[in-house]
Image 1 (cartoon, one colour):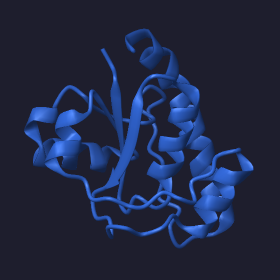
Image 2 (tube, helix red, strand yellow; image 1 turned 45 degrees about the horizontal axis):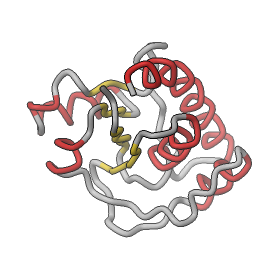
Image 3 (cartoon, rainbow, N blue to C red; image 1 turned 135 degrees about the vertical axis):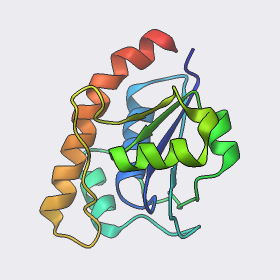
Image 4 (cartoon, rainbow, N blue to C red; image 1 turned 45 degrees about the vertical axis):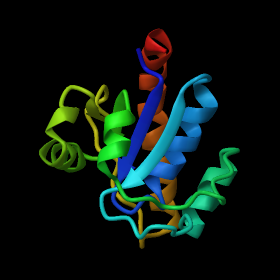
Length: 145
């Protein structure tokens, strides 16, 4: 049963907040949070991530970055990482999470590249991959919620 989802990227200011808010919009009754492997705690979303999310009808402006920690991993029923390297790092640091950590693009076999420090086009590309990945996960999440 899935009642809580954790979305993970590096800084928790671009990809994972966009994914967190999109999943929250698509799936009712499930708690969705996000965190970063190397987050600067309290950082606001990247302005380009805020813009791209806003264009998709998501208001992520109030999001603040948090660091991945044991409690977040323990309380999540499903952990979605942006890249295979993130997935492996989470499982190395939190061996008990094995079996509940997947890439957001696991079903389509793709990573979501980090747009941080790149052009607006990269943010749009990242959001599109997140949207596709979540689109594949939503029916599975709803079936297990």
